[in-house]
Image (cartoon, rainbow, N blue to C red; front, side, top):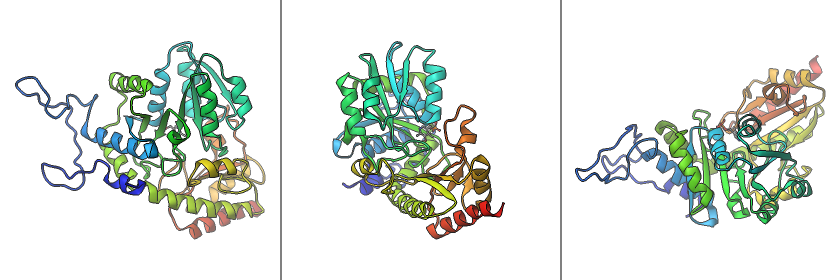
Length: 381
Ligand SMILES: *Cc1c(COP(=O)(O)O)cnc(C)c1O
């Protein structure tokens, strides 16, 4: 089956009790034993297994595995909890190499929780392979990759990074939140683990928080991650599993729309005199375009622009937007605009004149008209 069909049919069976075509939400925290003590349905207690969570995990494993065959997934209460489970699978003294522009929440948990817990950390520019090679140590146990990156949309070469990391025996985890399996399959490029914040494109409607870690079937580290999921208990609740599964069914079509609209918006912005720079891997002028073409089948719905001026000008443009909503996060059907430096706070390295766009599924003409009138705010003052 192809990706679109898998997204709709993988593990889809009508409810045997009622014939309902969509799955029921199973809220029960506990499941009945037979007189002989067995659990005939395989469910014991909600923290370790729940029907909605198992259905979601199976679907996400199927979508991410692509041509690589069987995979397993563990769903967590957030993308952050999913990332944390990967770090918790390491031991104190292990070295972690992460991108210098890794998602700021991931950098924060590494520095404020996992450094005191004993992980050794280094942050490097992952688009620079010689810098990565120089930073790898014999004790490097994990290379964390995130591409495209946030918010500069830098592209790093997943296959080349995997080759470097595997030489020292490190696991490669790829945060595939921005690209999604509809656009990029890290397992096919050699990655060992794939992590998602399902809060973004997989859920797709800005109404449910969640995360997932996916591995090839039989992966040793995943066995530990599954144990962490059940014993530490940062699991995804049944209703959130149900919403995320519903969202994931339409992922392929949403990602095509997001990409088509982002490409159109990027081309419009690149030609606008009030725009100093546009960062979108689908533009041939983007420094990562060639690698992106090789490892992505779609360039995705995220882009950043730098306006002429500084923070004041960027905030004025965001302030004048009418169709784009001023909000953080990404991956929903609605377009969002955000001044990243304000959200990231005083330790942010993001340029002050940068605005990040999550390009939604509204008509692209309306999105362009909105940005055009908002950018006109710069010539008004
Ligand atoms: C949002 C995000 C996360 C964190 O996910 P939460 O669900 O908010 O905890 C991690 N990585 C990336 C790339 C993200 O965009």
